[in-house]
Length: 226
Image 1 (cartoon, rainbow, N blue to C red):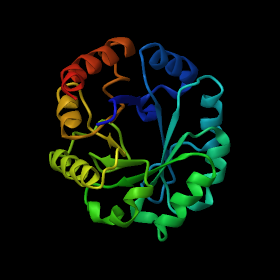
Image 2: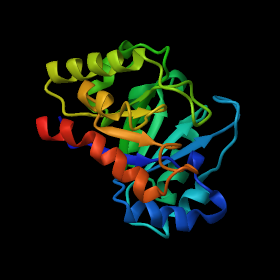
Image 3: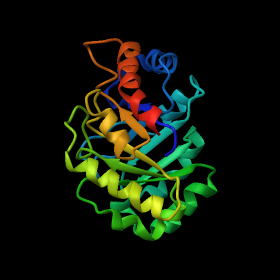
C-alpha cells in the first residue's frame, strides 16, 4: 500500500486567516491541502472557486487536492488547473463520460481523482480503474464538515483496495469525511492511504500542531505494519 498521507480540509478552516491556516498545517507536516469546491447544485452549499485556490497556491508549495463537488465539472477543469490544482477530483455521479473527463484532467497536467458518494457502488468506476490516480471515497454525505463516519465506509474501502490489488494497481484511496483520531487507523488498515482531515484538525479544543500530531500517532502502528 502507498505511504499514508494527511490532507487537511479547509472546509472547516478559518478562511478569514487562510494564509495563517495554510502555514500552520504546513508546519505540522501536512502532505496535501484538500480544497472543497461546492456549486450549490451537486451539494446544497456554495463554498469557493478557482480564485481562492489561486490565492492559496501563492502561499504554499504543498500539493493542492481539489475536490470538485460540482455539476458538469468538465466545464471548469481548465480554470482549476490554471489556479494551481495538482489533483482534480470529480464525482462519478455527475460524469456522463468519465473516461473523457479523466483524459481531460491528465491533459491539463493534473492527477485524476474520482469521488464516490456513500450510496455509489464501486462498479461505477470499474471500467476506468486503470486510468484513475486516486479514488475519493466519501465517508459522509457530501456538503458539510463535522459529520460522523458512515460505518459501512470501512468495508467499501477494504473492497476497493482488494479490487485494485487484483489488478496490480497502486491507486491512492482517499477517505473524505468523518475521519477522527479514534478511527484513522481503521481507515488506513482497510486500505485508505490519503486521509482528509477537517474538523479534527481545525477545531477549538487543540492546536493544529497537536491535532496533526495525534493523527500521526494514531497512524504510526499501521505504517509500521505496511
